Length: 286
Image (cartoon, rainbow, N blue to C red):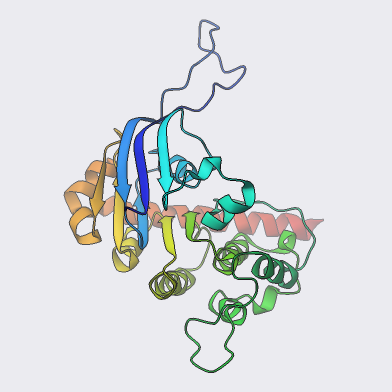
């Protein structure tokens, strides 16, 4: 049995009220997927493709956060969209891009709560610590560099710090699968490397499956077991990084010369840094 199966899946987002064409008629969205069927393996699987190609929607369908318009989705033999909320979360956790929180609880309190109330019930051993009594909570705090923010509320953290906390939440909850939509957003390069190395190790040592989308092709090549490459026409290619991420196929997927993709990643990072700097300047001026 494949870990994740899509059987003749069609999905269309509902129309946006007030979104009218030039003749004043309601614009009806086009299907994101039509009669889509695929079987995806377990392991550390990276979704790759340009923005708007359907990666996020596929993750939401796979995890049961969206229900298909037609067809069925099976995750570990279950239809996640039909499960009660707690069972759904235990089957599949989701880390969204740009998640926002209003709670004033400290990071330490939130980490403990997630750890105690998920599948692990606060009793998981560290995967790297070989000494007796090594605990997973302490390990993820170290791996994701959270010691300095434990006494801070999420609302006071930077984007990169929030993403590292979210990664810790995902590990500590203990779902059978994790869906991560751009979880490395706004993190430093060395932090991305550390996070991916740990996530891959966690997958292989615990049997958890992680589906992750990220723009950094070099990191996908380095860490992913399997790659699902999305093309603009909704076709896809599945295989190892070496099989799928060839120069020709990447250019076909992104519609730009291969050499330009690294520049695009750098420009995106510079933009994020500028937004963070503006946020800090605004806060200081108050």
